[in-house]
Length: 148
Image 1 (tube, helix red, strand yellow):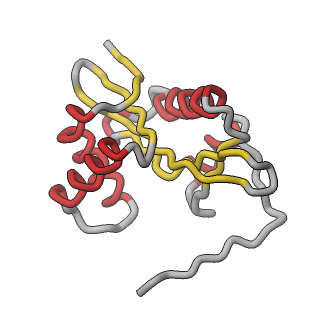
Image 2 (cartoon, rainbow, N blue to C red):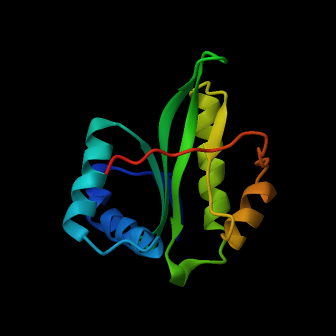
């Protein structure tokens, strides 16, 4: 039995494991204690919205969105920052379900849209997002400054 829902604080131990898998996928070192602390802080402080897919009591996928604002539109945007499906549960449509939950959050919060970034080499993501109605916005340059 599968359920897609908003994450709650009792999900933190399993969600931290998934989050750690996500970070490893992006070439970061495993750090379960830090992942646990980070996810627990996001849920308790309500800094982000996290939705999970639960399959027979096991969390198998998640999406995390952060609120940002558009000054020109004078509305909230949601930044879809993290989307991950455990490798043993891929191909079941969980990413699309989580994106639909994200769109519903956008609608119910009266936000103007959802923004996301993915690597040019992320073939799956670069097929998934357009299939879910996202448009590639290539008329701007994306810059990053990193505090070392």
